[in-house]
Amino acid sequence: MKCFNCGNEISDNTIEICPNCSSVINATKQNFISYIGSPDSLAGYQKSYKLLLLKSIIEHVINHCDPVISSVITDIRDYYTSRIKRGLQADYDVDIRIANIESASDYDIFAFIKSQPYKVINEKGFLFLNRNAEGKLSFVFNEDISASMSESEWKKLLDIIDAKICLYFQRYDSSNTEIRQDTTTPAEKDSVESIIVNPDLSILEITNLSVRAKNILGRNKLFTIGAVIEYIKDNDLLDLKNMGKKTCEEILSLLGKNNVRMAPQADADSIATLFAGNSYRLFVNYCTKNGLTHLSDIDGMDFSVLLSEPGFGVSKLNAVIKKYNEIIQEHKCSAPNNQSDSIVIMPLNDALPTININKSNENLNISCLRFAGISAKSIAIFYKNGYSKIGQLSTVTIGKLTRMFGDKGQAYFDKIKLFEKPLLQIATDLLNQQKTNR
Image (cartoon, rainbow, N blue to C red; front, side, top):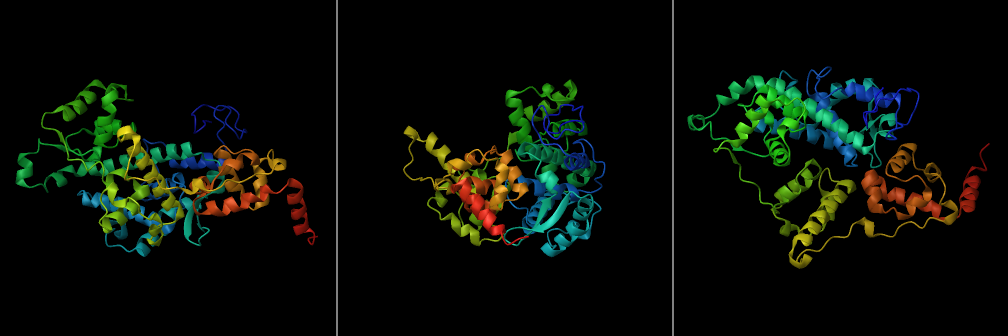
């Protein structure tokens, strides 16, 4: 047996903690990882449905957001729609609701997800539907999986899924390049050698790049032209796994032509550039809709107005504010004399008072949080974030809890305040609550 986190062999199949990296090990987690499979295999994936569903849910988990139905539907719709906008099919020989994703309703997409990819994964016992604290229907992984996976393991799993998606669509897109070439105008065909290299362009869409080259780049997680260009700035392509001299020369030849040029880049100060990524998509859409295009346009903005937008919750709001503060800090540090007259960093919830843990509780194990009404699943998350003793919670803030648990952050902050009381008082209160029970 191999540890998924560190990759080391484990001879004792009965242990629950990896002796090399302290990663949690259990049968359900191992079965789930085996079910996902290796990055270079599509065994068990006849269509892209399961991969995209898992990709969206895991991205939400990594970002500490509840994967509510509406958000997952939006992610899947956006992915397929972006393919259509690039002149590709959403997917090949698929359900009409996916083939016509642009006109399909959210209800149609959810009905399809529930009857197809979700049903298959659910029957394996890995994924379920449940209502979150706000009463919204969300996807949740089996507790044995969610409580034992570290953030680095989720990211590693997401990389595998991304590679499999790349491999899946390459199988179809590569065989349909002639169809896409025939849609170009005569003027475009005359200048076919004049390639505009967009950093976000998928390597799968480069028609004069061999399948072998695409496979090698994809397996080494270089999925876009921008990623390849960034890599070769400081590294040798020959260092990539399975890269041969001929394939290396092919890639360098393509990127080294005199007529290869980068597409005009977006303004470095634009909101779309600064808030790139799926986590901030709703925020960028809001800004675009309201004519906010540059960082200066949101100076002094009351971010709480975002909560009135569909799909926006407290966790996403805090993610946007955190990102904004990071960007502002970077601008402040790069300004002359490290000063900025027009930008003020917004205070996060981290500025709120912390919890004053009573001395009698400081050495209690973190598992004692159950007496405050916090679930075992959440206690496992505390442990993974470095909290092993109740005393360590004296430094935790609402901001930190929100990043760990999303909308539950405020409620957990209030529950942990139980340990501001002396241990004897806590025990007395708990016994009094139970004294009428047999």
